Amino acid sequence: MKGNKYVKYLRWSLLALITIFITTESYLHITQGGGISPSIHALCPFGGLESLYQVFTTGNLISKIFAGTLILFGITVVLALLFRRSFCGLLCPFGAIQEFFANVGQRIFKKRWIMPQKIDRPLRYLKYLVLLLTVFYAWKTAGLWMSSYDPWSAYAHLPEGLGSVWEESAVGLILLGITLIGSLLYDRFFCKYLCPMGALYGILGKVSPFKVVRNEDSCINCGKCNKVCPMNIDVQHVKEVKSAECINCQSCVLNCPKAGALESKEGSKAVKPIVVIALVLVVFFGSIFAFQVSGLYKLLPEPLKAGETINLDEIKGYMTINEAAEATHIELKEFYKKFQIPESVPAETMMKEISKTVPGYEFSQIKATLENSISDGNSEPIKK
Image 1: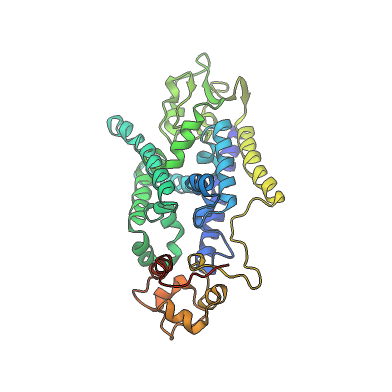
Image 2 (image 1 turned 60 degrees about the horizontal axis):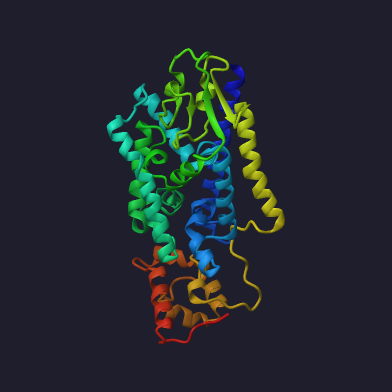
């Protein structure tokens, strides 16, 4: 149907725009500094889940996560309760990249590969294990311990160069490669088998009133719905799609050749695919806009006030040497000495960029050593 064709273009365009936006923000964060654009962790709703325990026990968010990330997480939870894994199917940039590679793969191989069921079924449970592990260790360590293993984080840091990403996140880079190659062969490879947020949204979506319903009287059993489903759900042989794997991409409904054979329903009310997409956009972006107006949606650190002093552990990689020295109220020469920075490195160099001119230099490691020294009582702490 002609109208459905335009809705498909709308969905692809939406995913493409979000992917371009997030990729651009990540690039600016890496190249221009975290004071200009948020980190990939702040832009990912999973950061909000990782921070929950820290927020409830200490009232603070873990490093690199801001109030906006927690709000973003809350909005996606509401989406999952209303429209299942809609964030995955209509808004997730990493999902969009996988779909792009899947389309390229189908053009190369002239076929759509499907994982054998005896392998596919147990692999689907992996993402639930990943969810448990990442949340447990994030809450236990109060940090983004998963960062070096995260393929999405590795993707966002590619502007630093493959060598730099490999040093900081070798496992994440390997998983990114596996995800992209896997997606060439199998649709939404990471979404099916490894995504912890997909696992969470799938669990929450089980209580959602949203579902795809097949009208057995109208269905002509052509199998088109099964062929286009990126999550390989057997839509053709069920009355209602209630699977936790459904990402509400609307592909089955949009590609069904028989009018009325497949319908999206919110409760008992049929909803057209264009309306489903519109409702998801209104809930997601409308909520973000409302929180922005209220001043609660923040994804960047607050700028330092005149004369404000920060602790050593609050020095950010995007700060220049000069900015970090001023913020900690340490004489520039003393700062160079304390952080073991050669005098040949210009004061305008970002802390995270020092390693590019001083091979083997580890800003985070030196900072951690200084923090431990202060906590052990070997140095006077710097207070605000």
